[in-house]
Image 1 (tube, rainbow, N blue to C red):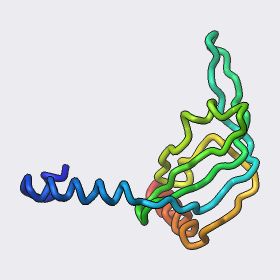
Image 2: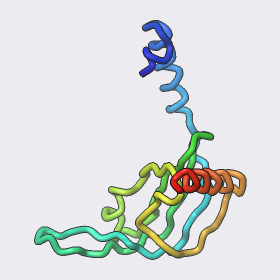
Image 3: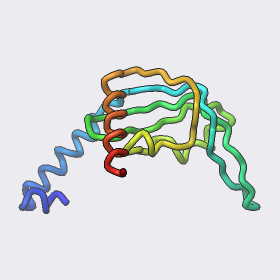
Length: 129
């Protein structure tokens, strides 16, 4: 992809390492937290029976850059920590795509970044209609 974008191997090689440096130096920014949400996720046991997952204590909505979307991180108690590890750090391009928890108390930590996520979600929804 970099070669197609840059046009030659030397520039593509240099750009790869620029992007790698950016990735290694990115800083997480907590946009919002959802405290005490309800869980809407289940897993299956060895017999194929659905087992609801206990809710996480907190869900953190985190961004690293000004790019669209966010990552969801789950703070869990010891009892259900391993249950949520499959979802921890999952990327969501829009707020509407976020799943697994409902309700709870939302605490906005960064109003501007949260407003951006809401706006991006509304724009995406309006394209769909």
